[in-house]
Image (tube, rainbow, N blue to C red; front, side, top):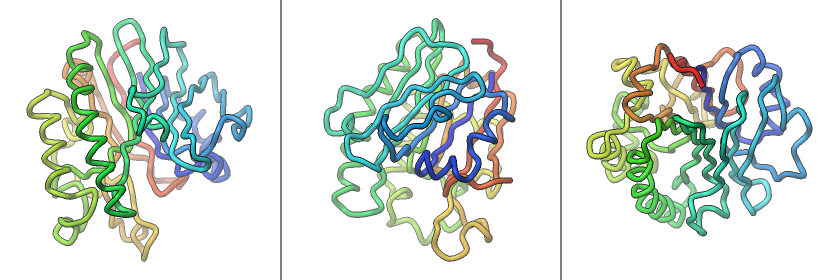
Amino acid sequence: MRIISANLNGIRSASSKGFFEWLPTQCADVVCVQELKAQAADLRPEFMVCDGLSGAFHYAEKKGYSGVGLYTRKPPQTIIEGLGLPEFDTEGRYIEAQYKGLAVISLYQPSGSSSEERQQAKFRFMEQFFPHLEKLMKSGREIIICGDWNIAHREIDLKNWKSNQKNSGFLPEERAWMARLFDELGWVDVYRSLYPEHTGEAYTWWSNRGQAWAKNVGWRIDYQIATPDIAARAKSASVFKNQRFSDHAPLIIDYDYDL
């Protein structure tokens, strides 16, 4: 089973850069996308079905903002849109595809980089999302949560960690929250479990400022975080950088698992 996670920074923008020509070359089973920046009326037919993958989406109410989606090759039993958190469900941040023994989730955690107000919203999301993560861990299903978590967990996960310790995405409170997911709840950071020492090859996002992409001054903020048993079935992982669809790069992980 191949699962891809990709923040598109606008589905229409990513399409113009070749995302939907690239996708059929990947033979994916599930593709999780974030930051659609579109509503249902904006989606062309090729955005809805691509290479036998059928899309389901949770849109933001605000036009040109946020939104998440899932493309599945095998139809799921159930699709769940939103977390039941009104403040954040209006922003289109969570969609879940449930199968008999597995659920795959596309998540777009808020960013706090634009203002202190948005940072406080991010903290509220993290506080309210944590009990849901605990509930998922106890659900009896294997779970894979794909997406843009907007947090670099450890110093190894970004190039300039020393100068970013007071910046959103690498704040001590954010990093401690991520550690709780792994240490208290038992979630597994699948990429890091496979490649404990990878640095620059693990980055998934680069600022548009300066020459961050050219110099690989990046951050690892896109993850596939999973329950232990399915995480242990991960065989390989990679970040696709040969073509740019967005300021993020797709994270591809292959699992020894049949849907």
